[in-house]
Length: 212
Image 1 (cartoon, rainbow, N blue to C red):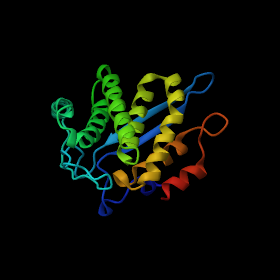
Image 2: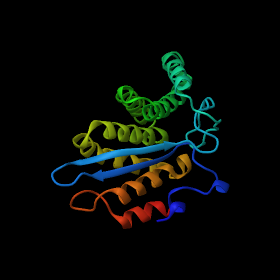
Image 3: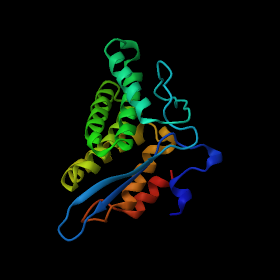
Image 4: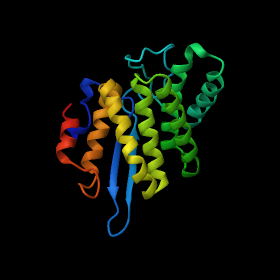
């Protein structure tokens, strides 16, 4: 597929966080590894505070610019506010899951595990407390991808089924979230992965998701 299959046209609006996910096999006795190839901030960026409280079906406004030190400051503020603001809890959990994924991608290697683990935990809480909201499942899947990338082939292989399950659940709830994030990430996984019986790769599955 051409570039247009992966990304929306600029005139039609771009995702705040457009994520390539690669699933690769290291051949000759090596195991499966899942690599988060990049998190690209388009157009309006991806770092603005969310409105309070967040309806689950509403997309969030963005402003330009993502500076790691600013994201870290916001992360600490949200962590402090989480236990003191029950009314805004879901909003804070959404933001925390997304911020941790961004910081995991932008930070040096020594900091990545902690950010992805935090993002996973916040997203798991959100998915448990709001199972019919797309955000918890989506950001859980992306933080799991981050863990798979840095955790090596064995961990990547073990996390792949859950990554796919969370993305499928996000797709079921709201395929348009993050400008079509769930089908776009699923399509990329099935495109990049080696085919059965080695892995889950399937060009027909990939096309099915990317055509949505």
